Structure formats: structure tokens, C-alpha cells
Image (cartoon, rainbow, N blue to C red):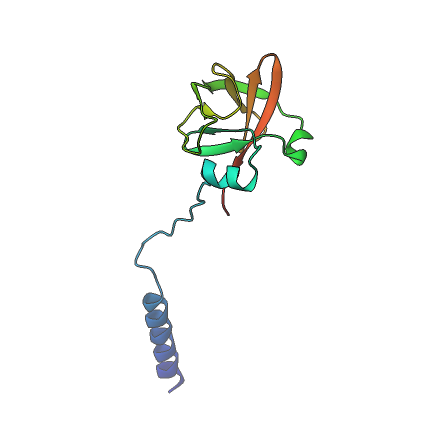
Length: 128
């Protein structure tokens, strides 16, 4: 009797586990990027640029306090847009054309820009 009850409980557990599975499907969590229009609506004076579909913004207090190491050059500002909020990659609203964009060795969410001998730190602005 106890052995039969044991087998029934194991069978029920297997049905429960199988019924609650996602059939091998993976769940992917995504973080949406905020576009230039949203950033500039919140802060019309924001200094931003777009790289790889993500908006980056400077003058963020806690980012300015970080000590970061410039890594490899990954791009440069190719166009400037201070007239509207439609941005393309490597487009800025304040940086001059030709400003060099570098990755940071220390963080993946911050890019370093060298412009006119000045080093600026830009944080990726994402929803989440």
C-alpha cells in the first residue's frame, strides 16, 4: 500500500513538473533604449549623442566622479543635429564632427569622448 502511494505521488509530481515547463523555450529579458526625443523632453539642454542605437548623455554627477580608463576608439561623431530630435548613430547635438568615441575599460555602459583636448564621459540612457 505504501509503495503504491509512493509511486502515485512520484507520478503526480512528474506530471506537475512537465505541465509547468516552458517546453525548452528560453525567456529573454530586454532593456529598451530611450530615444533622443525622450531625453531632450526631460532635459532640453542635455548634451547627447547616439551610438549603436543607444543614446548617451554627459554631465551626470556620479559618472563624472568615476575614474575611467580610455580603451579603443570605436567611432567618431559624423554629424550634428541641434534642430530636431531624430538621431542616427554617431550623431550629436553638441559635440563637434570628428570628436572621437572610445570604449571605457572599466564599464560597458559608459563611453569616453575626446573633443578639443577635453575628455567627456557619457552614460548609456536606457529604460529599466
